[in-house]
Amino acid sequence: MENFQDSFDKSQLRFKVFDQKFEETMAHVKETMEDFRKKRQIWEDWKLTMQPLQPTAIALLYHFFTNYRKCKAGKPVDGDKNVIDIGNHDAQGGDIMADVVMISHGHIDDTHTFHELYGITHDTAKPYLGIYSSPLHLVYVY
Image (cartoon, rainbow, N blue to C red; front, side, top):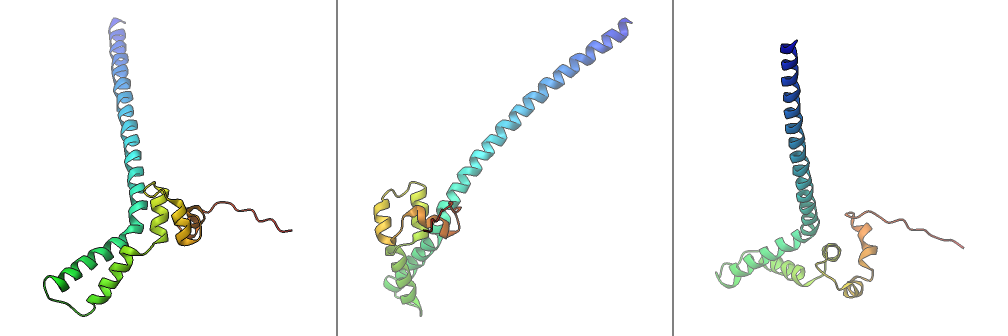
């Protein structure tokens, strides 16, 4: 009977060690998942901020490259004027989608100027851009 009891006690000890290691592993998995969720949220926020700005950034880079080629290197190419005009427009013109994202993420805080530029508030513009869910609007008809 002692032999059985010793074997049983050793098994119980092994189970306790296993349970402890399992709990430590699960705590580590939970920590890792939480870290992953935070990093994913940072990525999603970055993506929502940067995607609308991408066409403007590309136009500005084309503008810079083409302008350099034309002015400094003396090697203009057909279509350079169009690229420069597009770059000038993108650099100095408005982009409602980019501005909504910039305001929504706190990069622009002048909502009054936004309203003056586009004639609507940034909150009103959000649903029409397809990147934000539409709020419920109630319409009363008299």
